[in-house]
Image 1 (tube, rainbow, N blue to C red):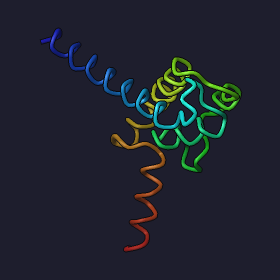
Image 2: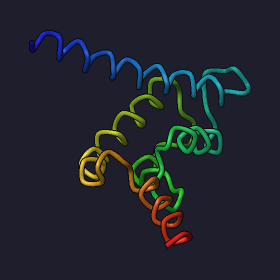
Image 3: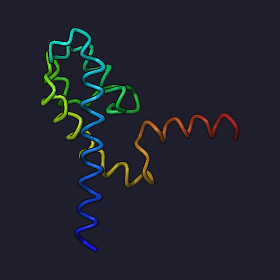
Length: 109
């Protein structure tokens, strides 16, 4: 039923948000509630919020001077929303995963 579907979607979103929060805390080495530019880049890469060349979202590059938890979660959520169509096109995988699979496939083909 639809109510159960909505509950499932909410749980997925909550899980993604919690993952972003945990990652933020992991990379907040100074424990001041802010990530430096380099820490933010590493945290985004840890979450897979990079393109196949390891670059963060272009729009996010302008936002990365210092990022608090709220802003970090927004960047992660926006990246995931923007890459949703690509993921659907790639049968549930992002471009980075597809690239890695292509390399692996060609290695044994």
